[in-house]
Each structure stands twice: as structure tokens, then as C-alpha cells.
Image (cartoon, rainbow, N blue to C red; front, side):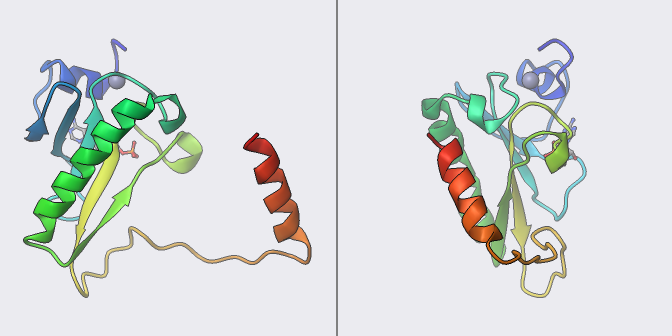
Length: 136
Ligand code: AMP
Ligand code: ZN
């Protein structure tokens, strides 16, 4: 992907604050962090969204998510892992990546908050049937 910013980072064409790199995965600091240490973990090969990524590569990517999370826990109380698929889910960079966001007690960050909704009568069963059907 010639115009993909993360592919350019992978190729070294634009700089990044690199935290980790191996043959398949790179991790670097997010330039606009939700909190200090916010890291992006990116498979080097270009795939747009999770369903496109081969399982073996996804596993290697998650290994790095785990490594970064472990490191961040030495200095922070917790962390969130976020991963957005497609514009509707607020994916801005169309190259699969995981956000690892350091959290601390009382930091008041809004990253993992959503307004809860409710199922109408029968809607949950309908949803369940549809989802199970679509998994076939
Ligand atoms: P998303 O909305 O999940 O696609 O998030 C994309 C993230 O990439 C945002 O948090 C941006 O701040 C971050 N980002 C965009 N360009 C760069 C860059 N050149 N270096 C580091 N992070 C970047
Ligand atoms: Zn890319």
C-alpha cells in the first residue's frame, strides 16, 4: 500500500518512536497519545482489518501487545487494549493496529466508556440467532 502511513513507517520512510521490532511486527508510540506511553502494535504486512489477518500473524501481533502491556504495568496501574475496524468504528489508519493505552487509578480518561443501551423485548434472542447464523 503506497499511500499507507503505517507501511511507510514499516519501510522506514517516515520516522517513528520505535518501542519494538521483529521480522513481522513493529510497535511505536502514538503521536497523539491518550496517555503517556500509548503504543501502537502493527503487523508489518498491510491488512486493513482483523478478519483479513492470517491467524499466525495475529498471534505474533498479540504476543507483542502482551509484551508492551507487561512493560507498561511496571510503571502504570493498568492498560486498555483498543482495536478499531473500519471508519464506522473510528478507524483512521486503514492498516490493522492495536492501541495499548496505559491507565492509572483516578486518571479520568474516557477511553473505555460507552453509554449502555437496552434490548427491547425479544431483541436479544433475535440478535443471538442472527449472530450465530452469521458465524456459520
Ligand atoms: P485509529 O483511529 O485506530 O486508526 O488510530 C490511529 C492512530 O494512529 C491515532 O491514535 C493516531 O494518533 C496515530 N498515528 C497517526 N499517524 C501516526 C504516526 N505517524 N506516528 C504515530 N502514530 C500515528
Ligand atoms: Zn499499510
